[in-house]
Image 1 (tube, rainbow, N blue to C red):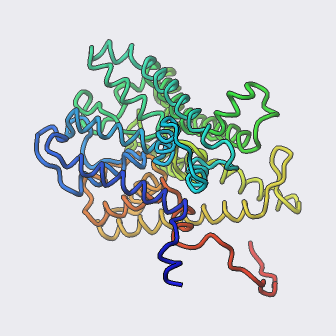
Image 2 (tube, rainbow, N blue to C red):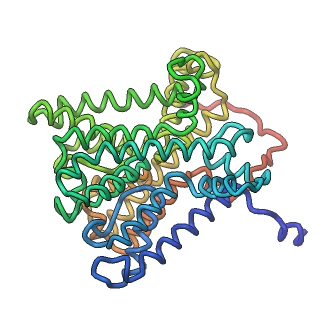
Image 3 (cartoon, rainbow, N blue to C red):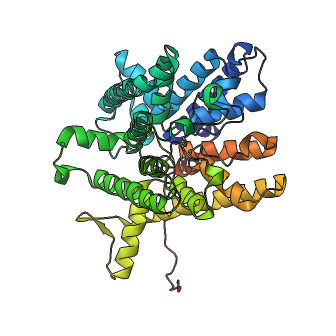
Length: 444
């Protein structure tokens, strides 16, 4: 029995987690090198670990301003970590294996399937080439669109700014290197009225957040929406609504005092960025309580499965809404776009929502008690961490080591996924042989 246990191979979920941890630790080591800091000093383990975790988990929360604290080498390390984290460690490894001409084993294909949230194992290797092609085209196009403004403002340095922010935006990372030009931790606030920056960044965030399976449908079927997978339809519909409604709310509420052009750009950008990019063109701390509450909700929802974004995902929200409609209409099963949703999917969606809400609140309570801060501010920060967003009320740099560890844990949870962590810790085989007797319980 012991020999069998000792020889047991790690599951695909365990491989994903171990791979992510390995890259985070490697990034931590590189960022601790004296060459990585602008001042030539060796960064502390806490600073390097937090930054590496935030980059790999494509979050954007930072304890040091990226532009002023890190050297060009350090910024390049962060950018590579963002790219690896956005694509997924397993996807990058699979692509390298694929172009080397070696065949992937069944367990490797299964791991890749779980990593990109594919519905079937067939075609997952071919999908890696498609993913890298999409990433190369979109990030290059994004950099070219950003270049005119950055070149006009900063000359040759604008090339690096364009590339960095294009990758960061597409990967929904939220890291910026504007601190030495527009003020530390300023993000893109200096460009709030510049369509040449706001619109390309918004597009990159959306393109990265809808998921590569959705892109596969778009490329394969074009405007023939009826041929799309139900998942792609749900993602596109959910994404559209989650941009439109918040943008309208922000336009008539939060930014009503601004001139028309700036008001439109601010409303659209602040509706897009919480899911889950982390850039900001408005001062988050100056927003009203209602505006911050809406932002927290958007941060927790996040992007879509198999994308560069985090959160409990748009599809989870759509499934729960479809289930609510089925209850209201007394239907036996929830439906969406003429297709029935399985009960297992509904249970998984409910479990994910509970996990995200519970961990967000528990993390906020710990930080609030530990640091003596208002619970509302702490909820914003923990929601940003677990949603891998990066928006902040400005408290992250001043938090203690224990609070930083909480945020690191939430960022890791948000990137690898709650169910991935649970499935890695316990056997995924069903141990249910007999069912318990059923008894009714009233809810609501």
